[in-house]
Image 1 (cartoon, rainbow, N blue to C red):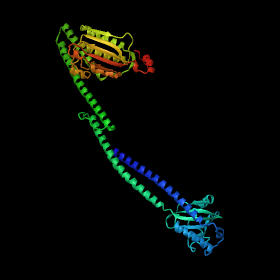
Image 2: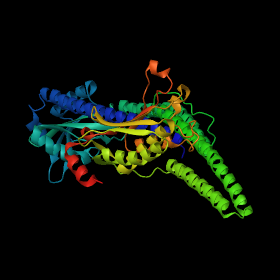
Image 3: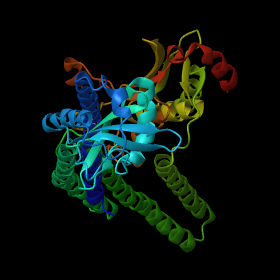
Image 4: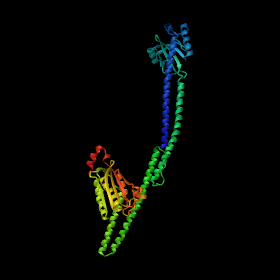
Length: 493
């Protein structure tokens, strides 16, 4: 089932449930109130009948036998009951109740004597009297449950205890059931209308949501198929709008990575083709010469080309697979010293010098020591290739460990400053231009950051001001107090 259909069904089900429940509660409350009102009305009418002095001659009335309906006392009681029926009820009866037989026999009724005389059973209401008579005997009055009369209408029978085993009963139609039936019909109509309205609203709302989801689905399919040129555009500040913006960022990121991958493949082919071409020439020259000295010289050049080729491959692998980080709390001076020792040899070969300013006390940083050494070595080699003087300083600044690498080279051109950490960006003749990109990857893997320091305006116009890179790692203040000892104990390398 589609999302739109499920959404619509949910709306319709909720509308029907809400309106039906409200209608049922209203119907139940109205029914209970009207029934209580009807019961009270029956009791009140029976009380009015009692006020008509029905009890005064009751002992004499109980002595009347069958076929004495012509007696003056009987006719007087019947006229009294008939006045009651003309004004308030449909029928009134004075009857005797025999508990053992559970039978109600008429004494005086508003029915004609030929149809209901003294001593005849009230068969039409007798099945409903047992409980009501018992209650009336205890409480003085009671009402029966609803029952259907011979005319098909619904009735209730109110009973008043007159004493001496005699009871007054009054019959009244349950006319309140008709409004309740109308109310039930109204509830059904309202529920049906609410269902139709909910279906229209649900279908419309779901249609808008589904249309936007389809747009996002098509965008996801385009991304999956590699069609990255078309941006994901879906307006709105709701969840779908935020999802669209997240998908657009994902598309842009994948597109950038694809471009970097294509550029890297192109650069790999370019960087490897040149050494391979040299190797081919050198190997051909070595085959053509018989001079052992010349052949040795050529093979030495072959070896250097192979070493350079391995370096290029290592650089590409370092960018593609920087390795997993294992950050531990350690003295960052140790990996900095190790990296500086390796870079210092390259500087001395070109007549340069490396200057280090390290604190006398340990500087604790939360990072992977091997990756710190690797990224610092990359920065130092870049600096050594750019200039002849390189400075390295380590300090604790506002709770962070800062490592600064600065050189006296020509600096980074203004047009390249924003892209200096992107792969294959650079004007160096050595390497593939991945050094700073690898540095950024390693720093971010250790939850740090690397920045190219801004030069002052006056220095920017001066040649040889050099470049300065600042690397930041989390220090001791970034760790929870209870975790410091565990990090130091388990992290020393």
